[in-house]
Length: 299
Image (cartoon, rainbow, N blue to C red; front, side, top):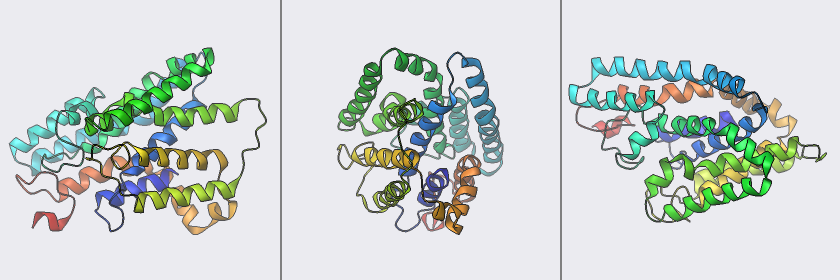
């Protein structure tokens, strides 16, 4: 699933045909992260949890920031390098989503933003910081967990009518995507004996996920919960990804060439996600042209 998500995001950033909505791959990443957090976090081992997450995420995260700053100093004008420095400052304190929220929409290309993709990691890191609290609340009351999930989702659907970029960038309005699948993981890992291995259902969900990404007419700047984002498309992607994680995929698909390729891409997905966007933006840099993602855009 990480391989699927990273392919969708990279194809979106390359402006590949039929993948105009590949940014929905980030929603799949949020769901996968929520699932993993629910499995990895163990009661009473907060320090171990943070240490594990930090060692997994932060070295490559900071390497991306530093390399982007260094390279941009050589290839960009001072005025645009200063924008990259500002982005690096926000990212260094794990608030890149806040920094980009202060700009225009994620979908605007007016600013020079080679570190724009780090917004999603800001959301994830901020969520990780409250995982122990959420796990404690879940153990205290399932109903309270459900209320937090529903409150976050309702807030996102209401706010997207008023400020789509706030609903898009801010962790409290994305938390429901982590929480929904975390609830699934907690349920499946409990002593209920639930027979959850239903590969054909997982495969159906994967096909639906790809169909939604390609065909659903979502507009990230539209103030509308049905066709805006995060709205109905985000909910459908979240449910589809949760189904794949819960029910699994057929062995025949996992052993096939596409399945093996996606597994390998999944192993590399974090590095691919971190590196691909600044490479594209810096390689296509044209002074005073904002963020360029295709060669034709700079002509």
